[in-house]
Length: 232
Image (cartoon, rainbow, N blue to C red):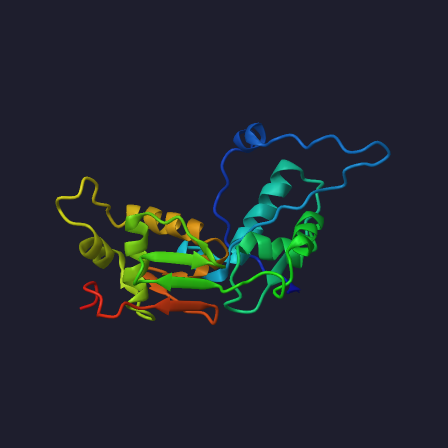
């Protein structure tokens, strides 16, 4: 992991809500140890370029908006921004990658406590279609039936972007108690990703279209002995 300077060219900034609302909601900084003084703070923001694009923005605009907010709240403040880089497809939570790249002491300490690969079996993601389960580093992921169905549908169509409408039609029937719309399907995907933990990026958002399963080197799929009735 490394650090790269962010392009500081001007960007169009969306107007920020009232400063009073932001200030009243912000938590107070805890008291610093005796003999020291607070000289500033770090805010770690975990989001990759694809997720930013899916949200209709980019990293530069987010940074410029945060810098503008700091200047509005405290005109005498100084800001500095850096981007955390990691190998494409490395996986892991974005915010954890950022904290490690920027040498956050707490993140570094936790990282050092993780046993080496020789001491702990690490098999990545195993999507076991035959037994209807997902293993994350040899631990079963606590997926609901519908979450597994959603992942399975994407896995069986590896590399193809699936539209939200297709997911709804394929995985929900008119008789279901709650049939999601194209907006709430995003909530189902978000819950699935949260349970995938460090491997959440195997379910990739394709802006303006839908979702895609991306197989990495640490992902394996165990198929059933007969073709899945889900695959047409």
